[in-house]
Image (cartoon, rainbow, N blue to C red):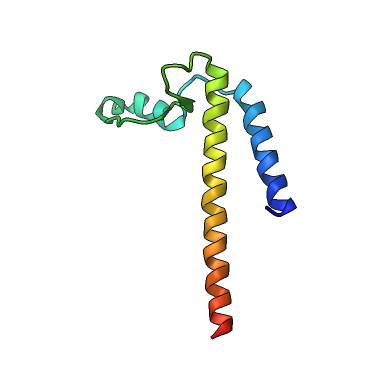
Length: 99
C-alpha cells in the first residue's frame, strides 16, 4: 500500500471513530421528509447488517462501538472498491500501451 493511500485510509478511520461519538439518533433528511409528507409507512425494509449506521448483531449492545465498527467496515469497503477500480483501470491502460 502506498503511503498516500495508507494515510487517506488512516485519516478516514480516525474520522469514523471521532464522528461516531457525535452521530445523531434522529432521522436523516429523507426520513424526515417522508414522515412529514406522510409516505414513510409505504417504504419497505429489507434485511441488512447495517441498520441506521449500526452493526446489527446480537452481541453488539454498545451503540457507539457498533457505529464505529459499521463505519470502519464501510470505509474498508469503499477503499477496497476504489483500489480495485484503480487497479483495473491502470491494467487497462498498461495493456493499451503495450499493444
